[in-house]
Image (tube, rainbow, N blue to C red):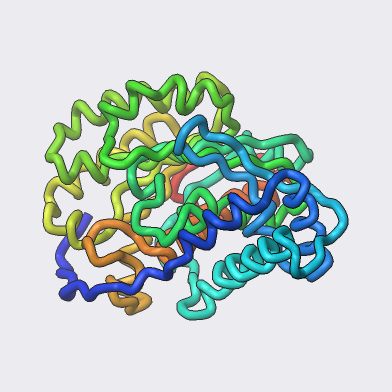
Length: 337
């Protein structure tokens, strides 16, 4: 793993101020009005990702919010105004890649086969995905929870499978790494009975200079427990950002360690570090086009592109199942996209 390309100086980013908008929609859309909102969205040909997407956040009990269909509300009513605000949010989500396209990385490998979650999606069964991690799972740096990567992943999957029952649970807690995560592993991950767990780990280990050997033991144990529960696993390594890069030696050790864990357990790994470095080195994107001014966390575009690529891997695995391609679980790592 080479860490020989310095970052340019970071520039301040103007983060879109839509958090208040999302909160106002959540408050206004009471259950009956939420039904009217979904019908209006469908009738208007609007993608339902801003209203229908089923995402549970770990702010409180992790409640799952969904919207069903009914008759449209009058445009000047409270529900009608909520619908218009929801449309604005959906439009901003659709516009995010029109400014900078999210291109598949060249020469960077994908997560690999995801047989369990793919088989359930292919057969129309309900699917639960747990996004487990720290602040970049929680969504720090995004303009609102709508633009965290678990929310964007749920939206991507609902666009592809509009009739599917897909739940993405956001189990990210800022500042944690493996030692803290393992203390809540049972309640945050195993008790949710997931079909797939996306485990983002290691960034805080780099920043805190934790022992990679001790971190590996904890991640080994966690992956084994997920596999025993019958779920697919995708590990996500640290982000390519100035705060991580300035600790190049530690970052390199953690990236190699997670690769070893994935190989040992035959699970998937999303090489976030290499993907983000490809954005910078090969696609010539300025660092501040995908990382916020703190030099660490991704912005709305970064989270959205990350989620898009993850979603594409899941969709590809579903396609293989439908075509009768039986990819063994031992081929779950570093398969070309």
